[in-house]
Image (tube, rainbow, N blue to C red):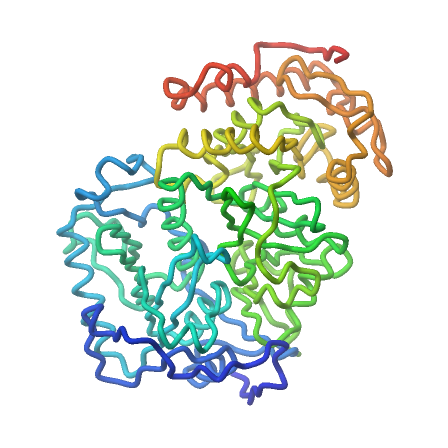
Length: 555
C-alpha cells in the first residue's frame, strides 16, 4: 500500500474550510448514538487521506485514489426494495423492478444499521444537495462508516457553501453500511447479504452489504424520479450539453455513450447522467460525473482521460501496474471500471448546472444485432415509443451465460430508478417535446454490417460526425428514406460519414439475413411493449415497428 500526503495544492478544486461544520440537525435525529469520532463534512483531500490511513485504497502514479469494491462491482437490483405503506401504496409501479418490502423488514434493518453505525470507531457525514435548480433540489445527508464512500458522495452530489452548511437541514438521509452483511436466513424478505431499502414515508435509505458506490447516487436518483412528476417536472436518465443557445439531452443505458458523447469540446457540459426538465429548462441533479473507464483512450475521450490524472478523482476497480499507472484495458475485476470526479474537472462545462429547453433529444442505443441505422429522425410519437421501450443490447462476455447478442429493454432508459408507472414519464416527455418543438433522434453507437461478431463497432468519429450534424442542423435539408419496418427516417448523406453505412440493410452481405434479423428485433420490440399497451395512447402505441418488411420507400 502506498503512502502519500495530499495537500490543497494537489487538488484542482479550492477548499472551503468546512470540516466539522454542520447545521442544527444532529445524528440523534437518525437514531444514532455515536461512540467514536464523527467527521462532519470533510473535504476530498482530508477524506482521501483518511481513506489511505484506513487502508481503503491506494494511490495511482498520478495521485488518484483507487479502490476495489469487493464481490459486488455493480448495482444489485435484486436486493433493492421500497417500503410498501400508506405513502407509497398507490404511487409506486410495483413489480419485479420496484419490489415491495414490508415496513417490519425496514424497521428491523434500520435497527441493525443504527446499532452498527453507532458502534463504529469513526463515522463520516456529508451534508449535500441533489439538484442544481434551487426550486427543485433536495437537501440530503449521507452517513457512512467509510471515508472513501463519503468522498464519493461529496464528489457526485452538489456541495453546499459554508453558509449553506450552517443552516442545512436534511430532507432525505442515507445510512450507508457497506460492511454490515445481512443474514437472509434470519431476515424474512431478503435474498442475499446486501440490501438497498427506501422508505418514502421516513425519507430514509438504507444501503448495506455492498461496497459498490453507485448504489448511493442511484438511490438519490430514484427519490428525485419519484418527487418531480408530482409537480409536473420530468426526471431523466440522460446527459446534457449546450452551446448556450442550443441544448441537447442524451438518453441511454450504461455503455451506450451518454458520458462520452456529452463531453464535446464545442459544447459545454451540463451533466453526464441525471437531469430534470422543468418549465424553465434543464438542470443537473449532480455535482460530479461517473464515467466508465474500460478501454478508455486519450485520443477518443481526452476530457475524461485527463480526470484520471487529477487528484480528487476516485477510480473503482481499475488495475494499477507496478509503476502505479492504470491499465484501462484490464477487466479482470470487472468491465464496469469507473471514475467519479467533480464536474469542475471538465473545463468546458456550464457552471450553473442548468440550460435552456432542448432543441434536440437523442436516444442512444448500442444495437448489437446490426439492424438499426447509425442515426434516424423520429416523430414525437416514435420518440415516446422508444422512450418507453428503452432498447439496447448486451453482447457476449458482458455477463455470465451470454454467448449471443441479447436485447435489453429498460423503460425510460432507466427502469431500475423509475418508481412510478412508465406512462407518467412518457406523458411528461411527450408534452414537453410538443411544447418546445424538440427534434428527436435515434443514434446507434453499436454495430451494422452483419452485427456483433461480423464487424467492428461503428467508429466513434462517425458517431460524433452524425451527432454534430444533427445538433447543428446540417441534417435538416438532406434526403431521407422512411424505413417501412421501423417507421423512422434515415438520412442519405452526412458530412464526413460514408453514405454507404447509413442504411444498415445495404451493409450486409445478405439482405435476406438482414431482413430475418430485423424482423426478429422488430418482434422483440412489439413483444416488450405489450405490457405498456393498455395504458398507452394509440398514436404512441402505433408508432412502433410494423410487420415484416424488406424494403424502404422514399419519404
